[in-house]
Image (cartoon, rainbow, N blue to C red):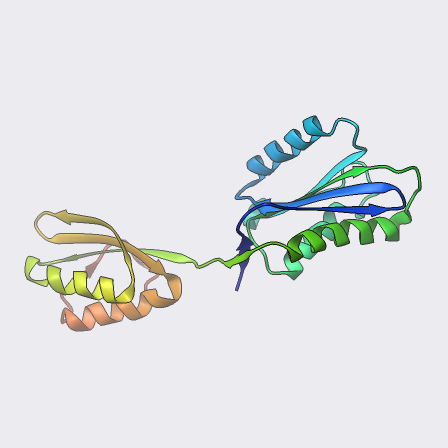
Length: 200
């Protein structure tokens, strides 16, 4: 099950006099990640590199920022993938200590920096939510409200018009079972709105 992290976590690693300042933090998209990286560049003007990796669906990225290609951003991204994370930004600010580490040494340094920061992070499961809408006749309103409460669904909207329309959400893995229960309890009088993907 994919996870994200709860709050930012920092870790510092020193290898052959080079300082690697790592941070892992929740991040929804590339625009947010680029703002964080710009802030780090401003905060650390003497740093040799500000490398980063973002795992956020279609907006993922891996940036070496002047390190040899594939020695920083990609290994950092691989750590995030290996831990089945989503919506996480890893940054590493490197202050060069005067001793070259070689490609293998750089890969290890960036991998270890991110892995050690993640080892201290509080991880939380990402629970995919499904949005559902249905309409019922007024006599069924109480029944629908009870079923939604029993299922732990979050009721987002109730509209009273010709019928009673409900908009609600709940974890994706419980949505089909709730829809089936409502259909059975309502004897087929529950009208689903705009849900071609619902299996009922």
